[in-house]
Image (cartoon, rainbow, N blue to C red):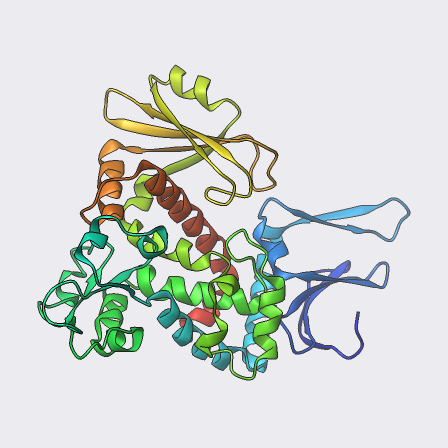
Length: 376
């Protein structure tokens, strides 16, 4: 351990180990102190995300090993991270960073040609808002939401409040309408909590939703102003922005989407009465870190399934991924992703599975950081 660093919080687990938070002005590290061996080990906080992981330490006796589950240690993790947030500049940095990140995530894509609306590029389809300048005079138009509104949210966008005049089409202009704040008040889990989880994860050194963001997390602490939007490029976010958009767009469907692991998805689904319909190949980067073959299955009761087979070994899951949901959910998802254009199975499968992955990631990290988010 670097002597120039500082222990900011500590929790005694038992006679064998203590848990601590250490930092040297960068993203914090978890310290596991083995009192039996008088040794310490530094670990990035993304180590905590694998809930099945066991912590094994050497005992006092030769060959003795003591094992702990992460669930057993959760109260200690919560305590040391809460103390870390109180005794450092973390909370004000988190607040400022979250405000900036929210604006980066809501930045509207600009559309000036009417024909473009039915054939948007993939980059613009991965935006929550469109600055639609295809009607009326030059520099005039409106901000269009590229996501469905829930019943709670419909009155957050009164008619005419999202008009664009004098070419004021940027994200600051969108925020001045007050619509983003109104949406967050009506559906906090969808709009408010998710941005705060991303912000906390980036500053604390958790994964960037299955991507390694360790160096980026440290870089954010090197910046005097972590709220500088110029620093938050697509490369910095490492796909988190697109995953957030997928999550927001398909938020209402997520509880109806079941995910599980299968050793043989074809056999399992056919045994359950599903009929195989078609297959799509996905290159690496869309559904995970390897290529996937995705097979569509339908059943007579209008339930459908996706069997996702990795084409190479992946550390993200064992076996094959299964997604099961009512056919109506998928039909609506195709509509939500098209904005009136032609439906695209390829894009919507990636969006739905990504949204489900992001949702699981948020819920996995939340127990560690809930106390920080409540303070914002």
